[in-house]
Amino acid sequence: MKDGFGRSIDYMRISVTDRCDLRCKYCMPEEGIKKVDKSKILNYEEIMRVCSVAIELGINKFKITGGEPLVRYDLMKLLRGMKALPGCEEVTMTTNGQLLPQYIDEIADIGIDGINISLDTLKPERYRDITRVGDLSKTLEAIDLCIEKGIKTKLNCLLQKDFNEDEIKDLTDFALGKDIDIRFIELMPIGVADAERGLSNEETMHCIKDIYPEIQEDHRKHGNGPAVYYKVPGKGGSIGIISAVHGSFCESCNRIRLTSMGYIKPCLCYEEGVFIRPYLEKEDDELRQVFKEIIKFKPARHCFENVRAVDHSAMAIIGG
Image (cartoon, rainbow, N blue to C red):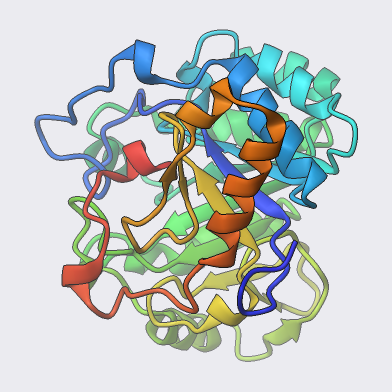
């Protein structure tokens, strides 16, 4: 389905929970966030119905997110059900990897199409510092298990000044050495995140070109996201740059978001959207019409350059 600017919308990120087993400093305030009452979270049947209607409109690729999706009870039931939906082309997931090892066999059996794993540092003490409670060894184990199972694996890294910018080479070498992609993502001014602490896309690329002067653009399709990819000759995997703040990929944006409470956001930057839960009690025609209206009024571009206009909800509530 096309929006009001002629963009084809075929991808939906679905947050299944606001809970997370980590407390990353750029995502949550020190005292944590106020948890949403579980009765207000969409159940799996409701999520499946939303997906079924979305597929009818051409939105047939889904990314499961949180919070941390693996803290949601019986998530495998949802993943298996979504993969079985007629017309569903792709189901992927993003995770911090801490709980992934205990579910990896079932996830591989389900046939998930890809997993993105957050990894901001290779130093255990830094990992503990940024996540407040995390264990780096669990995430590293999860990465190796995904690769071993043949699951398409990508790493997501948020670079921050005076924190982990000195690890660009180590993180990149780590990923390329395992023949997987790593994407460096600009820190967005959402919730408690301070975008001024994040490295811009230009600063990141300057560092990467210093490390790998022979780097070349990689024009192969790597997924559904906005990353621009680069290849280092002789190395496996690729380097992706997601210019979430300073970039201009809005003209090719193909996504909408569904929060765990049933709020559909056509753009991550703006608070505007539609609370879809009441329409789940109505006929499919009305639900389809709501989708059409949401997509029709998807904004032309984000507003991250105007901090006052940005959605200040915690990222865990919106959906990572």
